[in-house]
Figure: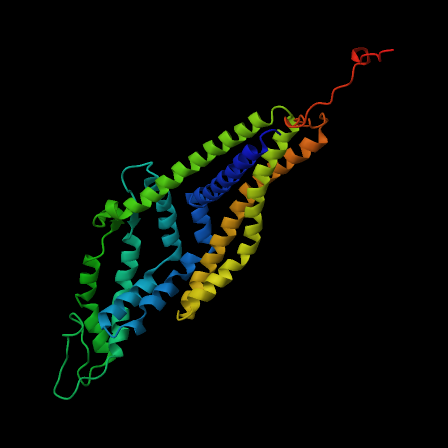
Length: 348
């Protein structure tokens, strides 16, 4: 190929654009609703959600009776199957909004089933927790100032039956239910559009960069074709290596990335509750497995195309590569052949 320096420069740009294209293609494929739904299902997020809530906000995290009762009620009222249905229903419209496919954020969670279960369980949980309260000091009947209407101690001689009867008619459950809506829409969040604006901008930039990388890659391939038109096998070789090297590098990096979940989990596990680590670790493994799968698919396709082009450049019958013309140095004079007729004969 003529102009090899220019060809090397174009080849380098092609490698960068192909690498960008594969990386962004993986990102876009991973953040498709179908892929995310699969990742969440594989990581057992829904089944482990009650344990996560218990470890983050469990009864040992607060001495406040109201907080204990409410958290225990939430833990026992969470139905993993219902949560999964609600999340999977709302993932597609959420990402349609992030990708600027819709202008309105329409993510709604139905809480009616959760409210019904919580309303049934709260009285029993409240009575069970009140039984654990200490007995009030002599002369003090009951103190409610520290628990938002719930007692912090029980009068002497109070029986569990009395406690249970008192909680069944308590207004505590009604107050809790009144603060929980039947449906919750993310639009109800204050300034939600402003809060998600940066995330929408990131997705927009990624989409633009993705298409720019495709266009630039095609332009670089076209330039390599123009430079190699004098000998067509060089077109296949340069383009083939331009696809194989970046795609192959990504495939090799994916092999080493198998150790990332263990490294990442080991770094964040320090100081965390082991139960929380058990919740995070399957999620990281599911994310890594699906990312690698996407990378192997797209990287493997491009690497395979590049390898085929290289093989064809050698396997197909082709003329020998033309040699560049040898340029003579202007400083070295061209030798002249003497003309015997121009030589004067000696005088006799």
